[in-house]
Length: 305
Length: 141
Image (spheres, rainbow over the protein chains, first blue to last red):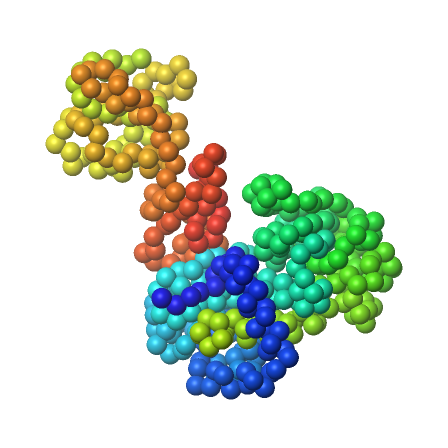
């Protein structure tokens, strides 16, 4: 039975450590891995458009000396003719050695994994899971902070609908002494289930606040997300609140000198471009770590490392 | 309290939400039994106002835990020699397949043909079930 990665928690803490150690080695010795996937094929089945994730997977496989095939929208796939996910994956299992799937319907990669004879990586299923983003975030934090323990993580913006934040919380609570500060407007606070089933159930220390500046000094990591206009009931509220959740140089004056500013991207205006040159702004490095962690994941799932 | 004197040995499924008996009858495939089965609809109940009851003759051979998923208020009375010898409360099963249907329009189960609807128990106290595919909690509404 092939191993699949459908949820960010499909890997244990120990397995994640192994994966990140491998990613570190890939960063240090890229030449060692340049031909390791020669003759192997990655299928990228993207039923909805995604520039970054798809290119990141493809770059990862190409860096390993492998090949890629696939489609980038549902229109150009057999899904347009009404083919089910379970049929598609049984066919693709015969064409490729490993598959990354993005699908607008939640749970589609899990359905695929039940019918597939090759490893499936969930590359995002609707608003549900996006495990390789979480792995990217953790590798970035570990690489730049040197540890995943004892960190205070600030999450800012849309914490209600932002799946990256939910996955980050679920993954980080597994490390010792993690604390959270959730910074959001009332309308976009973290969902109840996360508060009850994950944070309260695990006795995790957290605060829910509305102001970014005054909560900045204690943070080791600030994870920014987009506050979308359509999440508000009226335009007035959006205009009133949006600036409170935009990171600019002035707000950064309150931050620790080694705090990491992260963002899953794409950014719209929630981080002012004047912040980009600040050494604490690591969101473009984060995207680079996304390639390394996907390289490590492909190697692990193919049993090549 | 309804008279159960007519049942020498059997099971009484009590406190079924009024109108819910036929769904349970179908789920348990009681039409295939040779034994006597009685369905009482809209019986008076102090607690519920109205309720349904199903009486099944003979020894208990069915796994009734799944009924907790359909209706957690249901109680099971085991009858022997015309007396209630045991009042059994149902336990929430860990997994249920093809009993609940995921109502999340963004879930793959809304489009994928012939897929099993699977749920897992995530809160044994409150009886919260989540779809294994999209993880959305099942809601009766």
